[in-house]
Amino acid sequence: MLKIEKLNQYYGESHTLWDLNLDVPAGQCTVLMGRNGVGKTTLLQSIMGLLAVKDGVMDFAGTDLMKVSAEKRANLGIGYVPQGRQIFPMLSVEENLQIGLPARRDKVRKVPDFVYELFPLLKEMLGRRGGDLSGGQQQQLAIGRALVLDPKLLILDEPTEGIQPNIVHEIGDIIRKLNSDIGLTVLLVEQKLPFALRVGDRFAILDRGRTMASGAMAELNDALVKEYLTV
Image 1: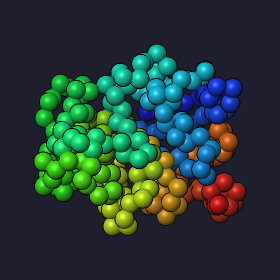
Image 2: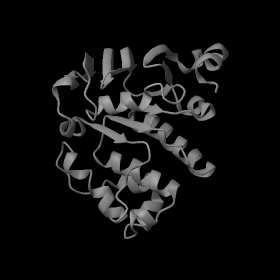
Image 3: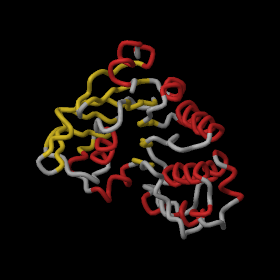
Image 4: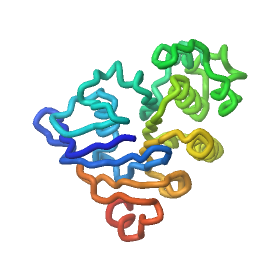
């Protein structure tokens, strides 16, 4: 579904992504792994058009993303949950969810029922301000907001960061449900190895802006973990 080849990105004079390759197959969960500062978030922001890239290939379901502006990428069917959630604290839960509706390709302007089925707590809190929710509740809201646009690809940047364990487990269940029940493709940045092993079908490891290894999750061995993931 998403294929990236020889992608190069710079911050000023600093070369951050080096001839990076990534393959995200349709209907699977691919986990992007690596220590802090190796380029994982930079890559996601490049995919979303939030950072300019110098050259390379980014193909999404047959569309050249390099030719699509950042504000149009959601319309292609890419849902994005950034690190830190970035919900609107002064807007209600319902208003936060409705923000994603204009990007729907089918022009539906109603929050889909399945979002409330996945996150029943959100339905109970529709009138509450986003800023009044707990961290775990805000993460559920951020994921729900991304799902509102009916994406083909859901991109999550460290969704378990700073979240209580019961919500972490619930988010894992939801990712697996989205994969198995509706075949949603997921690209996930995650540093918690047990969570990655639980939800991921495939992995890709970044180090210093380069793809160092990738494959089926069953191929993630102790040597790779020790070299690239252990702090």
